[in-house]
Image (cartoon, rainbow, N blue to C red; front, side, top):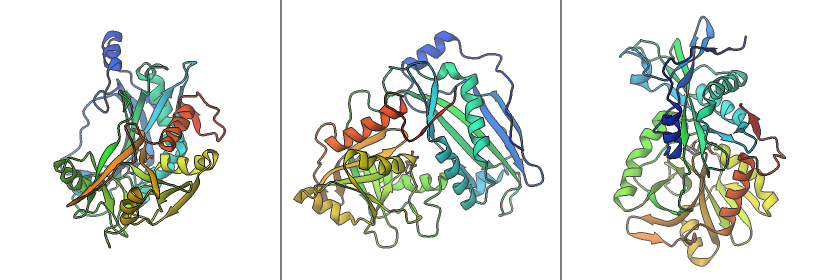
Length: 364
Ligand SMILES: Cc1ncc(COP(=O)(O)O)c(C=O)c1O
């Protein structure tokens, strides 16, 4: 039976003035809407108790399994306001399916796609005023579904009680002053994920394990770290929160193949589908970090960019490592291919281009 989300309305929602003040400068992940969605799963009762309730602190026991064994997964997607005032999401079923795959890997129950979509619709409907207006740049309402072991039990086994929630946060333009290429650090000491591990799942542990490499990069004057395969430290995997693409001089669009250690980004899959429309030949394969270093020097690699829901596409500038640096091919604002793919995706997301692939789902 599918979940319904009953509404318990907040008695003290943000005033129109306060909301307008936040929406004028929302940043990312700082402010949250008035409500959140939740549902509970128990081994005996399945999914039940779907509700929309006031956003606020949650109560779990100190013995809740998630706090000890990190049995949790999450998702990230956006709601976009179109010119006619309607609100849409980009391929949310892909996020629902990825959350199901992540849940299987973490021995959590799967939330059916229809229930996932119903939770987003119910939350966006009640907090619709928090979706930034059309024409305010690349602004959106970021949606963060998450699923965690809330059972109070210290034994190491899959939890018998699990909580699902969705929170929503207005998001400003990622690049308010124009695209700025990021400087990347090759994480040679720290891997993000290993073969047979949880790299392909969107689970908190992967992000925790990426932070040391990220910090090392920042200490070396870089913005982000790029992780390599943990076995040989030879092949490019991804960034801590974005997939990577390389554009070659003969019109190929290279990206590391999915080996089980990389997150299958929705943006990545969409770019692979769009590539042909833009006259590019997509190629998923293992890519040696040396190919990147040599390629930007000898002209074989023309552009490098990272992609993910938050920034859509970020041009990549210099590649740095202990004792060396490969030059940027990104100029001040990223190369031509980087910018045209970015524009093509944004145009679909904001309803400025025809949605010929049926990627948009209306939320409100
Ligand atoms: C590790 C990692 N890789 C890639 C991505 C890009 O995925 P998506 O395009 O679905 O946002 C993300 C962001 O969610 C991520 O956290």
